[in-house]
Length: 391
Ligand SMILES: NC(=O)c1ccc[n+]([C@@H]2O[C@H](COP(=O)([O-])OP(=O)(O)OC[C@H]3O[C@@H](n4cnc5c(N)ncnc54)[C@H](O)[C@@H]3O)[C@@H](O)[C@H]2O)c1
Ligand SMILES: [Fe+2]
Image (cartoon, rainbow, N blue to C red; front, side, top):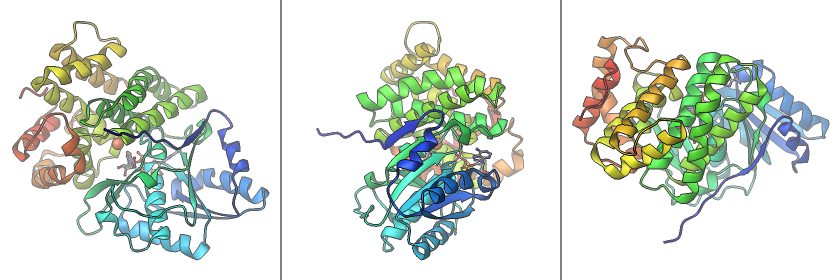
């Protein structure tokens, strides 16, 4: 069977931003959000471009977990400006808005919720996409995925297409150094979830494994340090690399059950993406490892890398889930919905919708163990209370 492994060109390290001076083009459309714009990060990129005689525009209309309507607004602005280069400066929400708007800019006939990996979009007739992440988490700068919300239902849906790999990812630690403590922790847990799920998904392969193994090791080493010393550029750089590696892994394998459960939590309870998927990750490991020795062995590989002792097998996999719970405590992330202070009444009220959206999420099909809607409902009950999965 033929397989592929794709990544953008990645520029990393202090002063990686100088790559902007080497770009070829005339008209750059910078996609960002209001917070990042106010921090001056988009302006920093804009200034380099205008100093090099480009014309450049900043569009800061992105909102967290972007909706289709927001993407359409960005695409309209892109069309009016007539960009030959699109530059995303922001977290996953900004990068996904840029990817999705770029799709509509180049091919207005695309219906985003119906976009499939098999569609021919026809990107790069008009513009290239450059991504400068300001969070160290989603890895979207290295993936072919987009995650958008439907306006009508608020449901987050993920889709991917090979054409959507950005052309260049620029990892400059100066762009993540202002990220507050809670978001540093949550987005770092998103990276960990990508790395772990990329390693056990049914589409895993030897290339994605290489990325996952290093990313898991790096997150355990550098995330607590980043959270403890937010202004340290070395720690930030290491987490940027870990997040990008984790993105490369899952872009070429897939994410799984933690993302189905987490996307649904983001849709229904509006919990931050990294917090959602990071919180549910240990429960999914416990669920997956209980059934299959083979899957438990995979988690055992990851456990060994982060220093969990003992013979490979189910117990070691369960201890890996515990190690993740400990890591979450260390970085100040809630390990259950109860700890996250979600009211029991809100949880109960949203439970049917949580189950329905999780079952509709495409990542569920990549999980190494099957699950039905009753199983999902049960998992959410455990995720609420914080109990270890025993089924
Ligand atoms: N396409 C993919 O491959 C992929 C992968 C994982 C997640 N996602 C999606 O990405 C989105 C989440 O992205 P995210 O976790 O990066 O968060 P985000 O982009 O939603 O940003 C969260 C908040 O942090 C702020 N922020 C970002 N960078 C900052 C900085 N340097 N300093 C201060 N504040 C900053 C933003 O303004 C925003 O208010 C979700 O919609 C998720 O589903 C996409
Ligand atoms: Fe994610």
